[in-house]
Length: 383
Image (cartoon, rainbow, N blue to C red; front, side, top):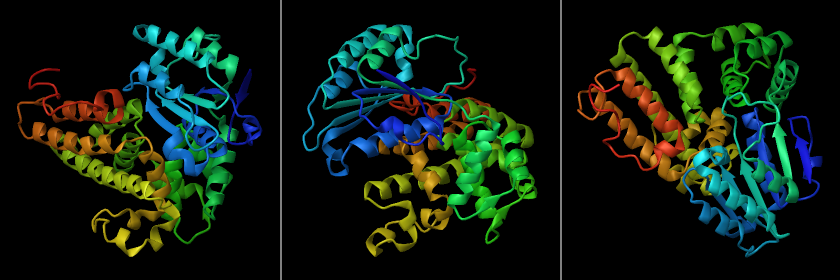
């Protein structure tokens, strides 16, 4: 029926009419996540979300369960919404039957259904005219709904977005600083957003971010690489995290020292993500951290409390939305497992860097993180 190109400057005209199905795709990860949130906020009543919203992962949810979910009628509101994340897995050859079954089900969606398929960027180069998922699935979505493409921003578009981002925090940034940030940073707005959060905190009471601030804080030094590595894991960007881990190993050539610092920082990050997720489940907004009810504040840890990091709370909330509670709990176990492997446990590699690489993959990849046991790191001596 429709195809839209959505960027931060697009406005919400594409949301004028609710579609029965959406396929969100493109190269700008943040725009894809924003588009999914906009669909939910526009068309699903908040009070009905507990009953009429299913948030599923295509990597871990059988196709029969996904189809069963989209075929159910709403209970409280006017629409039943099903969000299917990691839909890119349906491109795989071994998922062809699942893709065909889902395509058939999409064509049968009723007017009170709203399916949101999310295919996040993978970094792969695809030929022009290639299917987004499969030809049959793409066609089914177009028949009853809309393809929503979220292209990566060009340099000037990224600069404009950076200016808007800091303005929302009551700050400004010089053109030179914004261009320098774009030139040395990742094209991923999530990663650039993390850099901006750090810059805003760095300048304190000053109103403007200068090029010298970018040079001082966002330069590729050992400390910066380590924090960017932890941020990449937090938002589950596997390729970037592995690249940064290798960069960190060039700065810190003692593997055990690198492992100790890395594991401590990741543990702290996971604790902050867990707090952000639990607060959100209690209906607490990140802007309310300084005025928490006493009974909630008392349950927060004294060490690594999200309240002390309130200036970055929105980033933690954004990343926490990508983790289930079970995944976060399991992640802590994976840290313990990796630490034991580095200290000589047979269920691991004798090279600590190999154990860290395996840990990064497990933490970032949902399909690998689910269902792992403490014996899943490579055995000592294996590559």
